[in-house]
Image 1 (cartoon, rainbow, N blue to C red):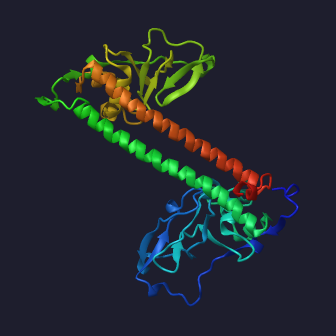
Image 2: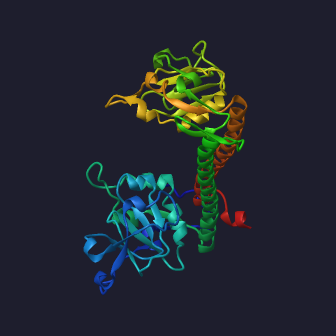
Image 3: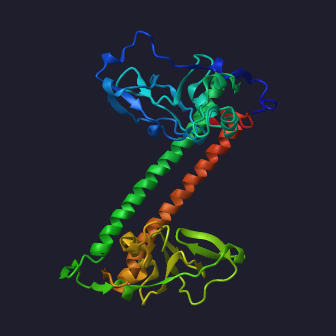
Length: 395
């Protein structure tokens, strides 16, 4: 990474000047502790500043590991974990130390010289990762970043207050993204619970009746799937025959390409589910489209609300009706006779409207999360290269 264009008041340093590697004290004996916190590679997150995840192991279960202390940066050193950005800081442990997988390097800042959060974020820079990855050693698939390579890494070093300001800005963006992700997860859980309720009890709070498939609301009917929708296999469209324009090509896992014409006589809006590969993956589409032969599309809704059908089919156990071993394939002839409870058309529309409102909020949260992720990576580059001042952002 070239340092020619960094601010004049920044210094150049080698990593060994700004960081130390934590080592186990000679007088420490693990046998003095009944259990020790252990951090395997699968508990180290990707690019997440803090983690609280570890397991507890007895002395007999600890055959090997890397000693670390609370507050250390745990940097994955083996491929592909290093390239993927696996690293974190664990602040609190039930003991004065922890043991991590041997495939990490525990790193600390140098007091009055560097800030550990600044070091953490600097190590996430794509150019830095690429540079270090190119110097990894070992056999293919088991290459590792050596400490000898890391200590010689040239790093830009702003004054300590500016290091902290840079880290603060980046941490603030990551915390905002994490908050949106938590909100998104909660909204998805609420939607799933609501779907279960609506497709069992409806929206009217009406009395229930007993049927051959159990209790259902009084105004609902028990109907075969084939009377609700007729599924049809899509049409093949080889890649060389596609003419990319504005007609989406829908396969087993959603939109997979574009074409200049749709399949004729396909209902709009439409619902498509995976036939082979991603069995049960559902796509709702409100424009002309081309359903591929890897999917089944609804050829006839039999007067039912298409959006309701889309949501309703999410509860259908498609995998149960697939055939084949190496590549399971959904057989539409098996699903058409299955019986289900079906609400009247006005209630179908009401249920669809409720669930669509949830989806709109979920999509908005997904987009906001993506924008925050883009902002983080843009700011990571600009702040770490001095193109933008973190001090002015905080002020």
